Amino acid sequence: DTEVTQTPKHLVMGMTNKKSLKCEQHMGHRAMYWYKQKAKKPPELMFVYSYEKLSINESVPSRFSPECPNSSLLNLHLHALQPEDSALYLCASNQGAPTDTQYFGPGTRLTVL
Amino acid sequence: GNSVTQMEGPVTLSEEAFLTINCTYTATGYPSLFWYVQYPGEGLQLLLKATKADDKGSNKGFEATYRKETTSFHLEKGSVQVSDSAVYFCALDNQGGKLIFGQGTELSVKP
Image 1 (spheres, rainbow over the protein chains, first blue to last red):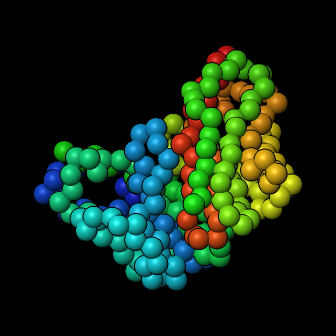
Image 2: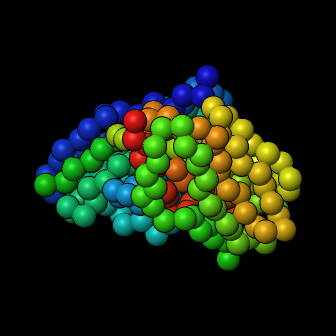
C-alpha cells in the first residue's frame, strides 16, 4: 500500500480565515513533505519533517504553519492567506533515507478569496 | 547546482504513436532519477525510477534509461493511448532529501 491521503479535497477560504490541511500515511514512512503547486508548474517544496522534526523550511511565509503531531500525520495550518496562495497543496512521504522514492497524495485545491 | 531540463510541451500525438519526452540533468555525484505523472485534477504518481547509471526503469509500457555519459533520462513508450494524456515530470534526488523537478511536459493523445 503506497497511499497518502489528504483532506479536504477542496477548500475555499477568505483572507481572514484560519483553516488546516491534513495529510496521513500508514506506510511507516519517517519523512513527510508539503509542496505547493501552481497551475502548469512543477511542485515547489515548502517543508520537510524527518522523524517528526522540522528539517527543511524553504523560507515559507509565517502565514503557513506546519505541524507533525505523530509519524503518520502532517498538518498545514493556514492563517491570513493572500489570493496568490491559491494553489494545489500536495503532501508526500518516504522512508527518509537519501533518494528514497516520495509518494504523493492527491492534494488539496485551495482557493483564497 | 542541481537542475533538470525537460522538453517543452504541449506534445500532441495520435493514439498508437511512439512517445519520447527528453530529460537532461545537471548534478554532482550520483543522483536517483524519477519520472512522475500527473493526471488532470490529481496528485503526482511515480511512473518509474532509476538509481544508478545504465539502470532502466519501466512501468505500464513506459521506459527510461539512466545515461550518465549524456546526463539524460528520456521517457519512451512504444504506443501511446488516450489515457496517457497527462503532465509528465522528470525529477532527481541528489541525496539532499529534496526532489528537483523539471518544468513538466504536457502530453495530449488524440483518438
